[in-house]
Length: 256
Image 1 (cartoon, rainbow, N blue to C red):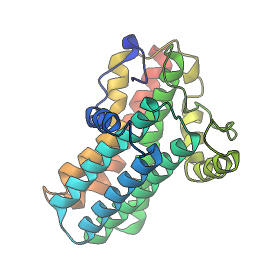
Image 2: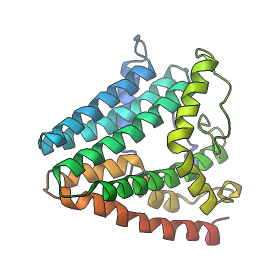
Image 3: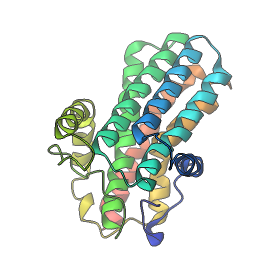
């Protein structure tokens, strides 16, 4: 099941794990596995990648980074095929992502000559890039008739728990989400506050924006590590943020 209607679907460069995710979700449809089980599994794969970076097993690190992205595409798919949407799972997925991003960059800092504070700059850059992608993508999903709308454009308050989950758990996960993502959301929303008013986004624009999707970011890291470019990963992602200064003006001036 797609998150978008056919006319709104675009080439998402960060979503290369979707075919595997659908296959895995369909394989687990009639089992006791839950979407949260899958989220925990991709978290384990990410932690394994961090270990491999620290131990300088860079080909294995690349493998587990890609595997993390593949599995990451399956938890939402499993929720859809089982018809068990969950705000708890949605927030847990996002929290795991930001923790793993920080740990992966920290591991790269540990095995390279990169300083900690420059690594923090790269982490902030990656999160702003990903937030821009998610902001526009969630808006598109809400504009797309019949599109998935579990994620909210503006996360102001904890949503009402869905069937099968507890409101207390949703509240806790929402508060954690706001702590780790709130500032990034605020910055991007401030830079383009009227994006939610657009009728839709052109497919070509969303394809370009998908260069900032987490899957594509991790793919770049997975390519650079075994090539011996670990010294360049952190400065690359800082410079990669320059595209934000191009995408937002394009949206504000030409896409309404």
